[in-house]
Amino acid sequence: MSTLLLQALYLVAAALFILGMKQLSSPKGARRGNWTSAVGMLIALLATVVNLGLLRRFTFTGSVLALVGVAVGSIVGTVGARRVRMTAMPQMVALFNGVGGGAAALVAVYELSYILGTHPSPAESFPSVFSIVVGGISFAGSMIAFAKLQELMTGTPITYPGQQVVNGLVALAIVALAVYLIGFSNLALAFSALLVLALVLGVAFVLPIGGADMPVVISLLNAFTGLAVAASGFILDNFALIVAGTLVGASGTLLTLLMSQAMGRSIANVLFAAVGSPVAGPAGAAGAEGKSVRAGQADDIGTMLAYSRRVIIVPGYGLAVAQAQHVVRELADLLEKKGVAVDYAIHPVAGRMPGHMNVLLAEANVPYEQLKEMDEINDDFKSTDVVLVVGANDVVNPAARNSPGSPIYGMPILNVDDAHNVVFLKRSMRPGFAGIDNELLYDPKTIMLFGDAKESLTKLVAAVKAA
Image (cartoon, rainbow, N blue to C red; front, side, top):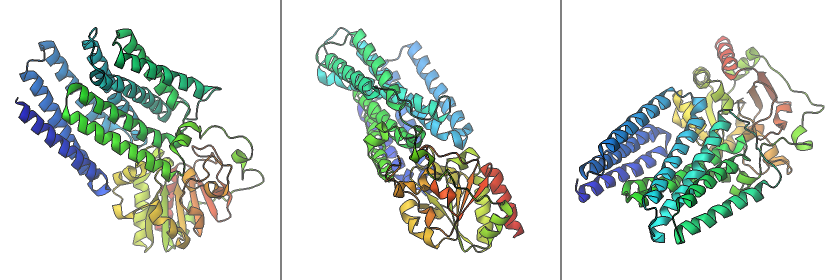
């Protein structure tokens, strides 16, 4: 295959990546965006494999391994994507993201071993060293994020005295080894140690981060993987990898900044404040002592919903856990038939990954125009008869506005407490990911409907039908 044709195919693939990214910015075009990007990746993959085969850079064994790799990856990706439950989507994203970072790191290790004993210029060795460090951190960090989200380990921050000092020393050791490899030698022991230290730092980086901040962490690690892949593109002189990695790195970085801004916190606070640790004292017990909650029955709540003028549904991770998105859509349809205006209020960090609630509700074919972002809908709560909070907690907690000592103070929230009536669907009174109590649960206008979200919504559907 001529160089001109190869570069033309890479250019087509890059254009499809960019177009797919643009389509992903809207729920209406997200499905097309996935297919567009997938076609671009297929073109880039086939062009690379065919070109290497024509140039005879593959041995017979190498060709077989490449085909096996493509087949295994395609099967695992297809089966995994089709069978994964919506509740497990965040950990699947973390897992696949980590695999990408690990692959980039392995490519860099191979390239350094290939030139072992030579004296490459800093310009030649820098991309490999960068990819090893960033890809290794992304792989190990993503595996810890996966383990936390899958509940293979505790989702609360894991901290110990002097943790930041230890992490700083590991980071300094990585920098020292990187400088040595780039400027002096590419000894196998040195770049092997560099990879091990990068893996250690990736684990140590994510351990002290709690479940409430996992959407930001996933986004940041996604950016890391993009940068590592872009560096691999420079290593392999592959234009498509450079473009794809840069797009992922840039979009992941921007999304990380936007999400931390939506939480009203700096990136440093998200990464190092250990939000979600058990809270002692007033912050953890606020509202619980000497106060009671008002528990309701599905029949009464269903009647109240049926005779409302406007209802806003606030989805949270509990909705995903219960797989209740289809039932909540059924409830909304029933209310609309009775003349009730229904919207969904989406907080930027609701759930466990960016856009989790949008994806969840899209699966139930909820009309896109009913999905309202926080800034768009916050002023409407004052004129809302009932807000139905399904599995959300921290994103509606007034402590973010009213309690300066709270870990979530300053985080923009949905103004649910402005509504005339609030109904919480929760299994229990346990706090959210941030580990703090929600004062709104004890408000006189709040009604609690305890139980599994799907079962509770099913009862509400029956009650609305009977009203």
